[in-house]
Length: 255
Image (tube, rainbow, N blue to C red; front, side, top):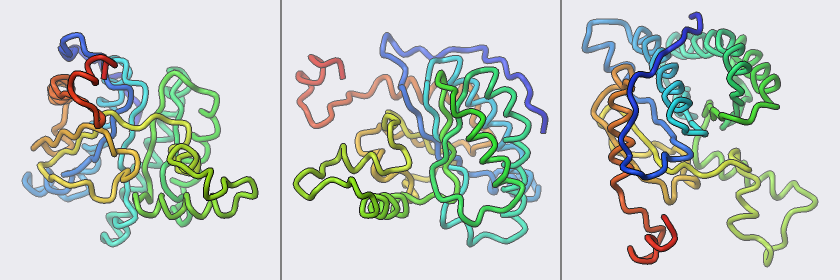
């Protein structure tokens, strides 16, 4: 799986609305895409990796600085062992092949989730990419692996309780608690896109998606191309984001 160059030939029409700073993706439907074509589920995952490459290039071309990919949930360990092996094999290959591109394009990789128990060589390639891109700061890719939203909040609470400099009960607020999350220092998503027609969060970024816009699309992840991504962004641009304010207040603050 050699890292190729994907040329993005279109640009979304956002009507003057700034592009979202952070887009999170629930990459759903690989298995169903394969089954409907009489293929093995693993072929759907392979095609899904090609979509990842295209979508990340879209984000870079369109000025979306942060991208989060829900790659493997804490619940996905229930899948057949052979499929899990393929998923982590694809992840290992992708990271190895794309590390030079990450460094060249100044892309930093972040991990959301718990790396405990991840198989080799995916674990080694993950740690290598995390370490070698630590200095990159133009673009950020957040890879959610062995991730669950509830688990993240529990792990954050555990980190806080183990911190000798933890805030007192009267000092604790959302900002202080956010510093213990996997996304510490990273802005919350403005937009969450889920493919495959499913309309649920599936335990994804439960804290961070509080004020995000949600776009659910019918296409399976392998069919989610630059044109469909552009339409999702155009739908986002038409939304009236109020953050609890009236429409007039939000307009006055440029929300």
